[in-house]
Figure: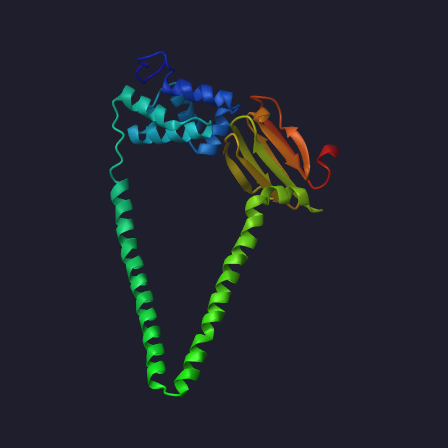
Length: 271
């Protein structure tokens, strides 16, 4: 039956927990394999608590993490359970030194940039001071001319800060809603929103290019647009709502159901 050690409590084994979560998300083993790039035989073995195909503890933990995320569960408790049952150490020594080395390299660049800015400011102040104190009567004109760019600089600063605010506010407030409300002729616009739970979603365009492949958690949404066609594969279809070409189509299906949908420009209710 299972190759790993049996759980010490009533909680399910790692493989059984992953299998239950996959079934609850409405996903097949093939779909999980496609989304995680973990081969089908390995997925099947892990769900049976046989980790001998993984190639060692490091790869086993990596596969558990990928599978857990694909079916919408927290991977960390499962990895800790695997380590306890198989006496595996979950150390990650190489990561911290690499991160610290990158951090150390970045700090001198910031220090050098700051020093260069200070040197430039000192040079400008020195030049202005030299022209004011050595120019005599012409110094007033020179100082007046040197001061004239300052109002221009100060007035340009608010313009720069206001421009991002005005340009940034609209995309942040409704990028998705505006795309759906517009529903431009000759294009198809699809928004999928996880309303009541986690659902695995795959989206491709008319050229077969993959636009999205991931589990949407409750509260998350994605919007896709193409000139000709959007194709969807949705797991746990009852957990998500669809908005197509400006129309609310409601739930994509029923809880636990896997559906495959195709939408083109025009009225989605007319097929």
